[in-house]
Every structure is written in C-alpha cells, then in structure tokens.
Image 1: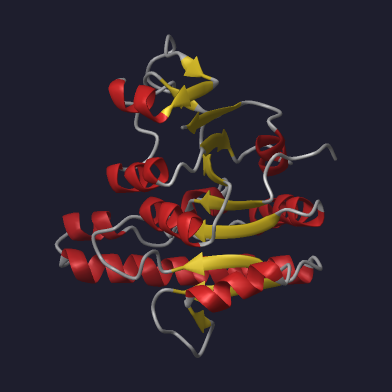
Image 2 (image 1 turned 90 degrees about the vertical axis):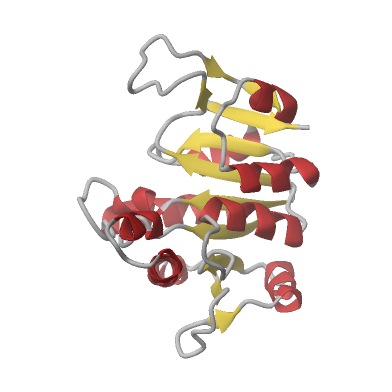
Amino acid sequence: MSETPYRRVLIKISGEALMGPSAFGLHPATVERIAQDVSEVRASGVDVAIVVGGGNIFRGIQGAAEGIDRATADYMGMLATVMNALALGEVLERQGTSARVMSALDVSAVCETYARPRALRHLEKGHVLIFAAGTGNPFFTTDTAAALRAAEMGCDALLKATQVDGVYSADPKKDPTATRYDRLSFDEALARDLKVMDTAAFALARENRIPVIVFSIHEPHAIGAAIRGEGRSTVVGP
C-alpha cells in the first residue's frame, strides 16, 4: 500500500451506505466490505475516526415531515446512528480491528458516552473510533457532527463517503452533462453553490482548514484509495 499524506482522518459514512442493495436496515455483506476497507486503512498506520448516519433506519427530517415533533424525530435519528455504530464496531472487532463506539447521547448500557480526552486516548492507542448520535443535539446533521469531531480530534482530512464519485456541478443522475471536479477550494465551492456538505458542516471544515474528500463508497478499497489520492474523488480544501 502506497504512502498516505494523512496521519489521522475522519470518515463520514451515511446510513444509506450501510444499507447496500437492501431497501431498509443493514446489508451484512456491505457492512463487512466497508469494515474491511476501514481495517486496511488502520493497518496502514492511519488513525481512523468514523461518524455514521442513521438514514437506513430513521431519518429525523423525514419523521418531522410526517408529523413527529422535529426535536423528537432528530433524537430518534440519533438512536438509529447508535445502532449502526454498534453494528460496524462489532464487525470491525470480528475482523481483528480494535474499535470503540462513543455516543453523544448517554446510552452507557451499550457504549461509552463521548468525552474528548478519552476519545483522543482511544485514537492514540490505535483503536478505530466510531462516533454515534451526531452532535447530541437536534437540528444538526451528521455532516455537522463529522466536521465537529474532525476538528476536535485534530484530523488531517474529512472523508465524505457518498453515492457518487466526487463533487459535480449538478446532480449527475439527473444531468448527464454535469461537470465533475477533481479539486476545489472552499471559496470556489461556495461561489459555485456546490452542495458539498450542509452549511454548518462546510463552515466548520473551512474555518479549521480541514480538507474534505468526497468519493463513492460503492467500490472495494475506496476509502484507502481516496486517502492516497488514487481513484476518483474530489478534494475541497483551503
């Protein structure tokens, strides 16, 4: 495996990524493949933190649209991310990669409650650290949680695993003429109104000068390739 320019990264993995070809929930083979990619990156010597979404189980904003109080719906979504984090952590452990799950909500019966000093020690000891329950607050997305934790953990890059292989000028699924970018500055992404992440997350990454690498999670070894600058991805940075 070739050299990587980063010593510590945070990977944002959506709940939909864990769903694979299934219509709902977790697809075991997909979770195994993603965990294997994470294991390979950790084995290369890179510190790895992960923020997981929960959209494969429950999406807060969708619940609010269906009549559930928005704050309550968001808390339900946070609990969905805890389930995903536990599943991913268990698979990593089974593969021989030490993993720890920390939740921004206090669910101490199933995992540790997030505390920054302890989280940093987990990374220093070589554990893969999986953050659950977003920021612990309603009205914030897991994208924002990813940017926040990346800053708190001193990460060199934030990897956003998506359904497409980078940032485009328009939705490539709807517009076949959309332009794909290899590299953008934060200012260029703002000027072109490119939806790299939600506004709060993007502002956090920009303020802390953390490059955001957008890539497709669907290919095997995609995480390592994105970190090494191989394969197809878009780097948005200072």
